[in-house]
Length: 163
Image (cartoon, rainbow, N blue to C red; front, side, top):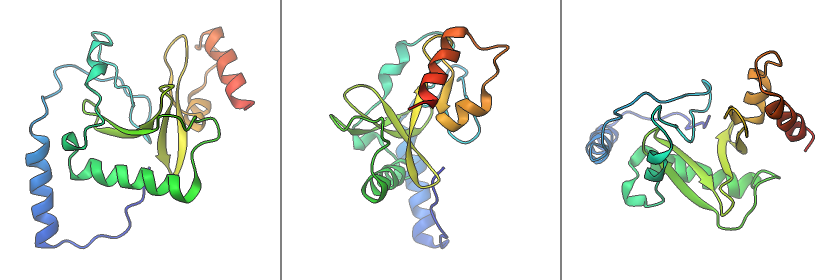
């Protein structure tokens, strides 16, 4: 994930944490279980058990971001400036987006591609076409199991690895 470096605990930081909780309290509680894919990067899409209809809650409105999310947005933009976008990520229509159901902050574009932070660099975040396996390429390779994955997803991952 991202590295925030050392922080000092001060009254100002404590106040910011309190304000962050207050600011975020406007969001509704999660009324359903989320599917998570991995330990390193939380599911960007956070597909609820009852369907895709709640995915429309994603926002680019910075007023909906808490202090934590604004910090992650800053880290995403810094990584873009320092290292560029992933090679397979289209630059057209790039924006910072928040999924309030998973609290995941990421870059997306006009093609709905997703880039997340991994070890201080931006990497693409993928969703397989058949069974919906999700994660970065490294995470997908790690979770790959030829005995349980659908053939279409296996072909897709092999093609993705060849890029």
